[in-house]
Image (cartoon, rainbow, N blue to C red; front, side):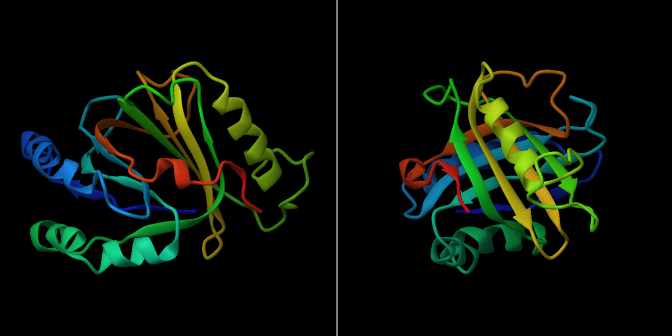
Length: 201
C-alpha cells in the first residue's frame, strides 16, 4: 500500500463552488480505476473547522506503485497540472490500514495528522510515546474501534522521517482528534477490498 496526497492552496477569495463542481463532475471518473484503493476528495475552507486557508487536497491509497505511477503520468493528473500548475506530491510507504465501524457508510470528513520521528526515538520501542512506529500502530488500533470511523491508515516518509495518520469519518471527527480537518466531497474506492488490512511490516 502507498499513501499519496497533494495539497493545492487557493487564494483567500477563491470561490470554492468551483472545486465542488469539479469534484461533482470529475470525481466519478475514478470510481473504477484499477489499483486505486481509495481517493477521498478533500477540501478545506478558510474559517471552517479552524482552517486558515482554502485548499483542495485529495488523499489516495494505492494498492501498488504501478497504479500510482499510471495515475501521475496519465490524463487525470495532467488535468490538475493544466488547471492549477504541478503540485508537490507527498507520498508515504504504508504501515497499516484498517476499516472502522462505519466502513459501510459514506464518509463526509477526514483528518490528517503528521508526526515527526525524532532521531533519538527507537522506532519499535513500545514504551516511547513520542513518535515510534509501535506507538502509532497502537493509536491506529484504538482509532479503528471509534464510532464513526470509516477507514484509517498509517504511513511513513523515510526521507523526512514523518508518520502520517489519515482517517475518514462518517460524520464530524471528534474534537479530540488532532491535525487538519477536511470535508470529503466524494469517495472513489474501486479496489478498497484489495488494500491489505492490518500491519504491513
